[in-house]
Image 1 (cartoon, rainbow, N blue to C red):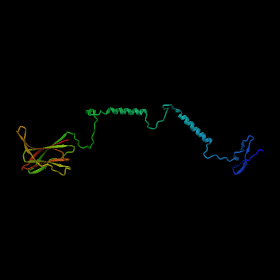
Image 2 (cartoon, helix red, strand yellow; image 1 turned 180 degrees about the horizontal axis):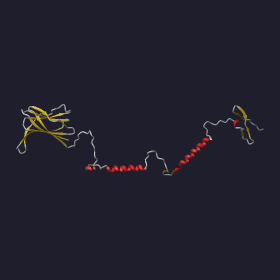
Image 3 (cartoon, rainbow, N blue to C red; image 1 turned 90 degrees about the vertical axis):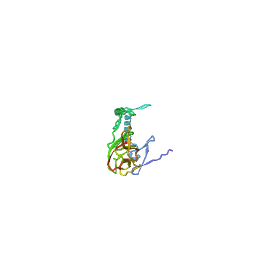
Length: 242
């Protein structure tokens, strides 16, 4: 004997209702309210599927401009970002580089017309060229039994200095004086007497003395002492050598 089982379901409001089957064994549900079926939170719906399909169609049409083969990717068109490099901009830059290249001289020494000019700073100090020299002369009157100093010279940029001290009468002494600050002076050698020196022919004589030394400090001068009872005028020639 066949057995039948009554299946009951729980509708909204906790009301128990029976389920029935058709002659083919399919379950009948009279109304949607007969069974409380709650969808899962976040489950897919037809609306969500439609939105997704629309996005996929848009992607498909957007990618239609791309052609891909085994060696490269060809982009039919693309929107460049703002200020992006273009072939026109590269051509302009290449033109400027070529112009600069023609203005840059070759390495090595050249004449003025083929050299790049150099402008020194407005506050640049005096420059000396190696092997060059700067000469100055001064007339120094020295009273009787008095010591007088020549003009102070700055030796910055120079390696050696030479002095010639000349006068018309005997009785004078000369001595180099050195200083690092043009205030404190030092006598590093004994004084030297100006002596009478004849010319090559021996027909005339001059009372003279000379110094030629390496620069020992930043500042230098000559101290001249007149040991006679009368004033003497001296000519002092200085030559600074770079």
